Image (cartoon, rainbow, N blue to C red; front, side):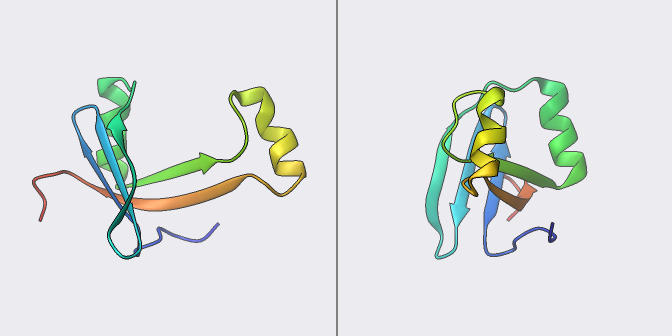
Amino acid sequence: MEGPQRAWSTILTGSRLTIRRPGDLTWFDSEIAATREWRHRVHDHGTLLLITGPFTNAFDCRPAAATGRLFLLNTPVRPANDT
């Protein structure tokens, strides 16, 4: 997998996650169910691996990947106050 895709940006503020795709268009903006420890780890690591595709649970990931419909995006993460 390639490194973080700099054309994308991710801001994590508390439990709110905002992901912007190239052109500064919002791709995702919502509260997420994540523990405080997970949020700290994301900030410490500085990147977030997003896995998306036509699945609703972990058991559906393998069939989505087998048909080439599982998508991965590694995006840099920054806190909201980092401008």
